[in-house]
Image (tube, rainbow, N blue to C red; front, side, top):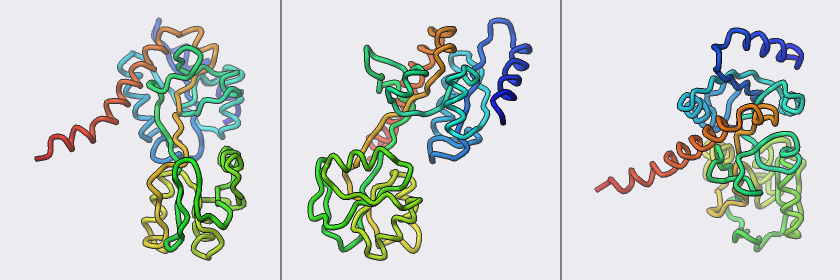
Amino acid sequence: MRSIDVCALIIWLSLFSPAGAVTMHICTGESPILPFTTPDAHGIADQLIQQAAKEVGLTIEYHRAPLVRCQAEMRANVSDAYPAAPYTQATASFCVFPMKGTDPDVERAILTRRTLVFRRLGSRTEWSGTRFTDLSTPVLTPSGMNSLPVLLGGLGVRVDSSGKSVEANFAKMLAGRADVAIAPEHSGLAIISQPPYAGKIEALPIPFTSQPYYLIVSKRFYQANSELMDKLWNVIGRLRNAADREPQRKLARKP
């Protein structure tokens, strides 16, 4: 959908909104980030946003677009929000994050996304959380995850980012071209649970990265609805923290 069409739709919808009601128009990506966000807004983070919005009396409208277009629409104040983004100074230049002083407030993040180190069975490579040992091959990372090569370069590690997907990198490992690869936790674990990777690739226990993601809003939307947004972020934090604690509660209740 073109930005001009989205703008016209938002204006049309606003004509029929009840007086005093606030509608947040969320631009969501065309590709899912499982299990967190999906194009049809059925991911864990999507459901959390909808639950929190209902609690504070905020109406949510979604449309999908490529990430670059969503960013352009938020810069132009055409779209009001994006469901899950990591904090960067570049993004903070045109969007608002939930803040605690001068830093993003991790207690009000919508999710935490981790990457893990995946190792070919038989390899002796280890990851301590700060450095690799017994590493003799480049570390594989998916193309497009640009922060990973930067972090690995800082560790003095050789990197191969030519693989177009996590599965392509795992196939390279099975072919003996690398000992380890870094991949998003959920997609990597899903892949190694299925043939031909099951029993041949394992995830190391210490995450490589753990990064909070936030519901972000355009500066204009925040300026017009700052009190409501602060309430929404507070509820998101409370609901997410409660959900995070639920597995521990279930374990505590077991005899």
